[in-house]
Image 1: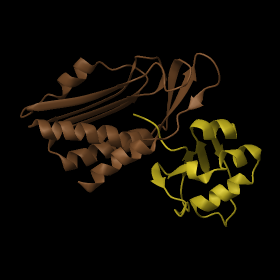
Image 2 (image 1 turned 135 degrees about the vertical axis):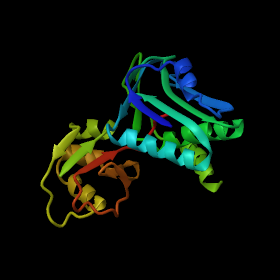
Image 3 (image 1 turned 90 degrees about the horizontal axis):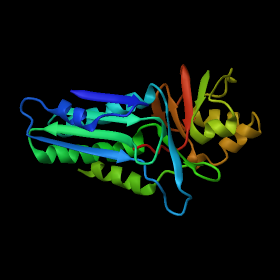
Length: 152
Length: 83
């Protein structure tokens, strides 16, 4: 079962992990992305603002989850991406995968987070404690991380 | 044609959405970008560096060569930075 959510509200990781359990599951892997308080040489972060494309974002995340389910024998898969204004330390994204064995769950989780960074329509803006806000530029390293899965 | 803008494209253009009547010769994403750039200074600034522009036609990622004939909704945005 694929569970895809784009929401302003926080998620409860414990509840989400429990929800991934199912008959035949022997391994559950997950990743949680959170807001870093300070980035590189920039002033301290006041908040991270996440913008999305309603309709397309959910669709793109569903497609990524379907690709993971086609590559690995997953029993369950969850992606929750928060949008709106998020404070340092708060959750941004939850990715979880459940399978009969650990390798599929771990690999699928890494694949999901790498791919959603490069192919889901979401944009981060950093609002600092002083000075103008900054839209985060895309990172080549993220493209490379996602690309490595195409060679499997 | 309904055209949407996100992130800094939205800020530079000054609107999240506009509905425009396109001239008949504008039939691809690339031709639409070229035409939009001529509209005003905001559009010209937003589309100045085309390497930084991504597009979706009816909720699917599309390239500059993609046809927009019959499309209902076209969106322009910077490279994505979620996760």
